[in-house]
Length: 82
Length: 241
Image (cartoon, rainbow over all chains, first blue to last red; front, side):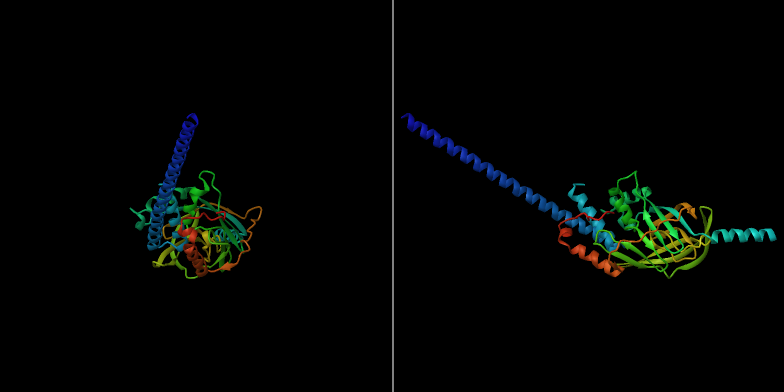
């Protein structure tokens, strides 16, 4: 009887641990997906700002190199959250 | 009258024998109207404010000159980067009679060759700068980009008493040293003049990279725009600025 009870408890404990581990992994996966989505969103929004800066600079007579660096600077500020 | 004439001869002769020199320039930048109220207002304002920490040195002899930016101890190099870009300064400019050479920055290892300005209009207007009588000369700077063709005024104040055809950032080809130069909203102004140095300056020469012209340089920049690294975001160039 004791052996049976021990086996039942062991199986329950093992299953619970395994389930919990799976849940954590799913959460981790979800987290990394959310992070990737945020970064992609940030990237696309910052790339947009970069392009706006480049266009604005060129429309005001900047040379290509100057516009390049102002665009790059805007991207950096945007990614840095400024 | 005779004595005056002798003094005049001595004066002209004295300046006529200028062999070399070291000129220090500062720079000031004004806001571009179209940037006001836009996303570029803040970064450009930073460039304007940091420009006061920039100083440049022109070393020259009778044959050539080099114009370079001095290291600043007050502000980090990174903070001055965009001020230099806004001032139109890319790297050391080696100036000769008919052209100048400048190693480009951030778009590969090349040396940009720029012909000397040949279409100066010499005006009668004068002003005194650091005790030297300067004459006004005007020209234009043309910028062509994907948004259009632009023409900006260039005003140089040159000093015939210093008969050296050089000046800031590759500008020259005038009958005297340029002590003040305005290119659109950027003004280079002289801070200190040392003539006939006891030790002749070492002018040096640009890096031994392939020489390209402005059109080829523009192509290199456009190639950088198409670069995947740039599309994904700014990749800091590895070159030292």
